[in-house]
Length: 209
Length: 196
Image (cartoon, rainbow over all chains, first blue to last red; front, side, top):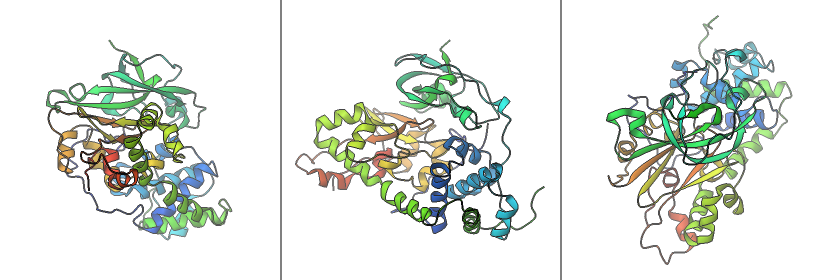
């Protein structure tokens, strides 16, 4: 989905603020949220990491941008547990004594990305990223759609996230570390001497034109 | 229907979620405490600093690290969630590496720890793929024009770590001394390692 999470290349955010000697967690509730997410994925098996990422992506853009990372994590966990019928939204709002915003709805499984290929490319191949869009989960960042790059590394097969984020039995596919020149991605205004490597599943790619 | 209630604070919502999980008997007592402790112990960027120092003093280890990052990190005891497939990016005099995750904030937890807020910020995620030289310069790292910058976006399941250049003048330093000067920022690639 073309959500707010897909930030690569957006402009206007300004300077990056850094905090010296930053602690792992700034407030106790953040550590608690991290632990709850670990428990839900690792122990309860209530959802997988792709479903989690997509639940966060489904937050409304205004909420997403105003929320800290661990508030986004909290929203993702609560959304999935309510959708899965483990908890109810009413219960959460009653315990929180206030509104508990959840993420937006999931696209139907018929709308998710295609799959069915693997192992088609090798190091040195020039590939093109398919320019297709899905209202579901995908790990193709917008900024590489339709762009051409060169395969630099082939990683082992991992579950295809466009499927596993939607509870479908995801087949696994190799992912490729594809290097794009800055000029290919950003045009003539691009910085000199820069490239970007993006890690892409086989189904996202085609042979170069 | 949109709720007209006042938004509960994140802390109140987190407590409500924990309450609901406990009430349903879904998570045994003590599990969240031990997961919190484990997070602090297992996900620590000082582990990555040990890996870098070892690679600087032991050419065979360096070769193994670049060939199979996962196995070489595991040799030193660093493995686990978000470290299932680690690729180490070797900084050279010709090419500077920097890592980002534009779509969420994926990081190699066993060697880089849980990511800092600047790494998770919209500004870093949006900008570093588009104007890396400017971003690094704003963050205090001037990369010479003749040095290429390769930005790696963590969009799938590979987790990355930069092997920074060993600073000059450290030839007679011990592995422990070297580990002490390696920073998380250098292993993400927004800084270089400087001697003392």
